Image (cartoon, rainbow, N blue to C red; front, side):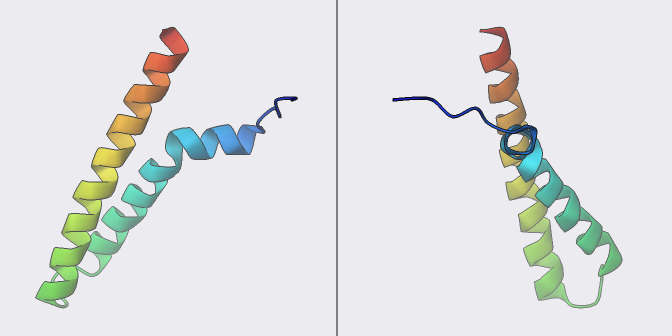
Length: 67
């Protein structure tokens, strides 16, 4: 079988997609800070969870590129 080459967009999504989502959550958190404690708590959790995914994705892509 032939392997399909991934486009630059696909590579970018794999490497930086979760970072973009985490930055979006952080922006929403800053803009809506204090409007409602439940929404603020959910956004804080989203920033932490998506941020941790982003860190691990970047580590894995760096490790795979070097190793």
